[in-house]
Length: 267
Image (cartoon, rainbow, N blue to C red; front, side):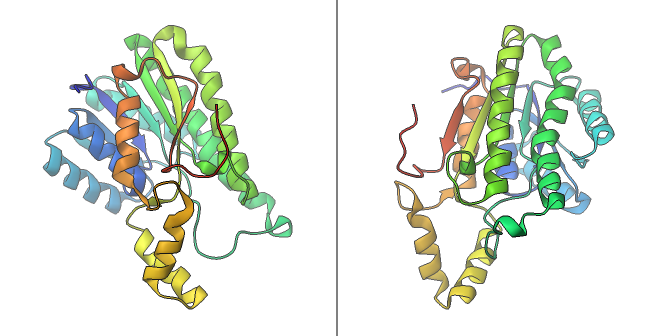
């Protein structure tokens, strides 16, 4: 299937590693020029060079903290200046969930942690969409894909659920407002996803639990219908479709990309 993405321009925040890097790779593989944004220059530049060599597309690294409104405005302006256009925004810059150590209970949830999470993931996504929207409107077409997480559908970490539910609410509101301008907005909920940080995380958990890395990895992979980790590239394939003109029938809605997490029926 031709996704009709050749020659379009995208911005992927949190694009230097993990799911963001996989998304940038998938889009570039479909003929998209991609700007990747993150806070660490060295990692960004290494990723940009790697993906450019691999795909033959323009991959531009932009250092940006999406917690800063001026930085976001400068980032979007820089993308448009270098590409001459912006068609696709993938909001992915956020602290990953599921890290080592226990999830804090009520007494362990600090105001500072809550404010940091909401400022980065929720307000950060809003800032990026707000800055990108005028350029997408000028095209008469665009796509915004917000990467959230299965915490929006299940309890287990209060802050994780709150931030992901908020991203879902943002998505539907943006979809309704921007739809008449030809802009679709969707949210993708990855589950446990295999990225470059997972081997170290599995080793840490194995040490904490006193079992082998193989056993802790097998246990962690049992939490979905297919019985294995979803790879970051497999989440990226979903995003590439949603970024394309072929996805016009999907907007304002969530797409779970966790291999069938949980037993609830969503309709």
